[in-house]
Amino acid sequence: MTDRYLAFANSTAGRRLIGALGLPAPVPLERWMAGRTRPVDGALLLGGAGARADAVRACAHKLSNALFADREGQHDLPRWTAEHGPRLKALVFDAGELTRFEQLIALRDFFQPTLKALATCPRLLILARPPETLEAPQAACVQCALEGFSRSLAKEVRGGGGVQLLYVDAGAEDRLEGALRFFLSPKSVYISGQVLRLARCDTAVDDWSRPLAGKQALVTGAARGIGAAIAETLARDGAQVLLLDVPDTADDLAALAARFGGRSLGLDICAAEAPQQLLGALPDGVDILVHNAGVTRDKTLAKMSEAQWNQVLAVNLEAPHRLTAALLEAGTLRDNGRVVLIASVSGIAGNFGQCNYAASKAGLIGLAQAWAPALGQRGISINAVAPGFIETQMTAAMPLTVREAGRRMNAMRQGGLPQDVAEAVAWLAQPDSGAVSGQVLRVCGQSLLGA
Image (cartoon, rainbow, N blue to C red; front, side, top):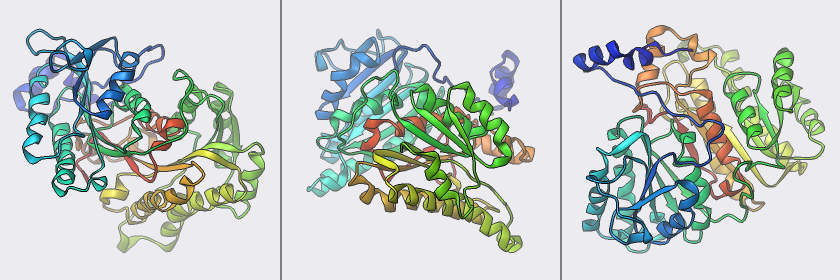
């Protein structure tokens, strides 16, 4: 669906009027396009010092062909200055060696000179050490302070930019490349203000042009919208995809699967026989499991019927739990597999008239957290992706005022696209993303709800 305000705000007349009235001026976001050869299309500035910065330097030439450091001679890179340097597309700062309160000034010293020299849709990334791994209370406190800084900076960066914080476990530095390729590229353009942890991981990507080559994937709710985008993106990255949706969508599902050589399966995931039918459709096993199927039955709790409550919980929460358990018990979900649950910011912040939906989506986040330790023993990761306002048929049916509020109530002042959610899922599905498990990644443009 077209965002008319976004189009008007970027027209000649619109820029004048919106500037005069002081209204939000959203910037068209740059998204990943086929044919790109490097994640960063522009200059990358590397700052800070430590094991994480060393790991970034080792792979930086694969990310951008214009590399700079903020100090003379640092990382064997030319120095960038605001006066003479190019506009910056990506910034990485290793804050892991900051252990005293007075050292936090390094954040200001690094980022402040860059803020007026950022290109459109810049990507900023702060690397740190998990506070819980540090014995000294002050050091742990300093690393925690990075969360408030990164989330606040994310709300100040203009031009469609995003800021993330990655806590990197000792020994996990060799898994940074995949995270850099995602968070410094347009694939993460609708993600900002996020904090994730990277742990050690034994699996790695062999071919970055097709990181999912040889993998078997299953996507539920794949006939349209976010599910269809996920299926297509996984196929783009090399996976063989089985698309699943309710039997009524069989024609649309088959047509979509035919576009990229996938298979389709019409199945009611709440049916008693669903687990056995699913096992029968996956005789060779599955490596990537994406639970996207979901429904809404919105009513205030005072007016919500028992049927409306039960249907949402059955589809959104009970079915993913039951089907995943069946795949695990049968050994169909392979070792080193990847499970991604599509949750929602409603499950984090709550939403008026969505007690049932928010409960189901919060439950999915809890499912990822609860299952992560046990699945990790088999090298399987499980994470939740929480979309915010995404332009789909569902949001297009919202009343105008509600739809506009959803679009503007985030740091980017616009809705996301199904592709934005799909790119996050595709990253979490990669072999080296086993470094992330039991976590939730919001794809919401840093929504003001629950931020």
